[in-house]
Structures are given as C-alpha cells and as structure tokens.
Length: 139
Image 1 (tube, rainbow, N blue to C red):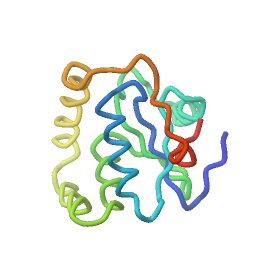
Image 2: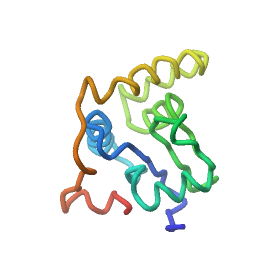
Image 3: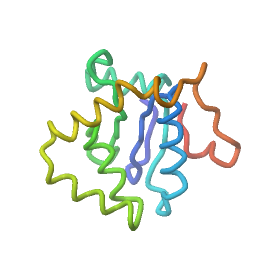
Image 4: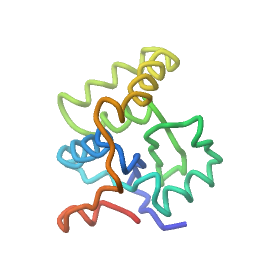
C-alpha cells in the first residue's frame, strides 16, 4: 500500500460528488496544522484501503477517514466530526455532536449522502487539484 506518513490522516471522498469536492476544499482551507491528505474513493489508494478494511461500497456511501498512526478507519458522521475537531474554532465545536447517538447522527448523514447528487450535482470525473494543492492529494 502507498505509504502514508504516521502524522497524517487520509480523507477518502467521492471524487465525482460536488458536495464532497466542496467539503474537501473547505477542509484544505482550514487545515492550518497540515494534518490531512486526500484521495478519491475511486483512486488506487482508495481502493486499497476499501479492500484492506473489507468495506462494502454498496452499503457505505460515505467519507472515510484513515488514521495512519493506528491504522484505523472511521466513516460517516464520526469521520466528519473527527475531521472537524482539527479545523480550529468555531468548526471544532462540532465535537459536541459526539454526544448524539451514532445511529441518529448517521441517519442524518445517510439522508444527505443519498440525496447529494440530486441536490448538489455530480462531475464526469474526479477533481484535478491545482498545482498548489497537488501535495495534499494521493493518487
């Protein structure tokens, strides 16, 4: 598998989803500690991680957060909140949503995920990062 630095976390996202691409750009802008790397779920490393963790992509229509330090994967609302906690004030306040039971958080997450193409549209291919952002993306 592609080597991911232990001090980084890899955000795997739907590369053809407009909402997902906007979310990635939002995180990049606020990732002041340079904590995150990014790759589309459709990329080679995305497919490697999906296979390694035996993730059924028919059941998991989600953002995935891979923590290289302890080799764990987080998905759906938990991944989003774990990402938010590293983005500084006021976004990091979203950690309060960890008190909401996971099944409720994921119900909302799944509703948005199910409708994201209809609401936000879809691209023909994955986002191509600008040269300045290229270092944050894995293929």
